[in-house]
Amino acid sequence: DAMVIQNPRYQVTQFGKPVTLSCSQTLNHNVMYWYQQKSSQAPKLLFHYYDKDFNNEADTPDNFQSRRPNTSFCFLDIRSPGLGDAAMYLCATSRDRPRAQHFGDGTRLSIL
Amino acid sequence: QKEVEQNSGPLSVPEGAIASLNCTYSDRGSQSFFWYRQYSGKSPELIMFIYSNGDKEDGRFTAQLNKASQYVSLLIRDSQPSDSATYLCAAFNAGGTSYGKLTFGQGTILTVHP
Image (cartoon, rainbow over all chains, first blue to last red; front, side, top):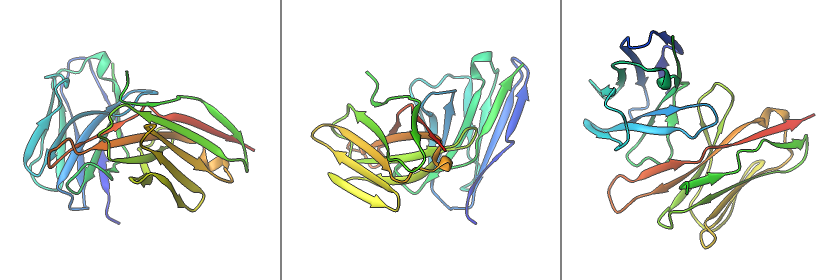
């Protein structure tokens, strides 16, 4: 089945230690998104790639970076995680406009 | 003011009843609306979308849109315990660009009790 896969499902890192979350898709969608979702809150869009074009949201901290080496893969890098970065990170894809988005199962990040 | 607002709940209904989930949005330029279901610890799953005023039905689910009142709702008939989840409302606005933006509400927790 075509899908969006996120690895790992759970990630524990130490305060200030860089961490990378990965996302892959077999839907061949040209747009990929990264969201941060904290408990009882709406998913917050961090950035997205429209094809190879990177689009950062204005309020996304510089601590968060992303890479998309090809259509299928996208990575979220957190350079120096703080306690406030503990959250569920969701990857999603869509074809062109961000209407019907397909989500991966998410990575739950914990910071020690 | 939040752009997409939902009552966080929890909304508790008995099995077999109709669950009514509501959402309001502030951006009059919003063109289409989506309902996602999110089970605890899982990712959102798209269950309905609507872009015209009125009702749209899909099985036990009915989405309702009133653009004049900037109001969207989701009705779940014959609610089952398996419907217990958080329901996220999202609004799409093309924003005059080729891309547009999808904005999520914070979600309503629904509990269906036997």
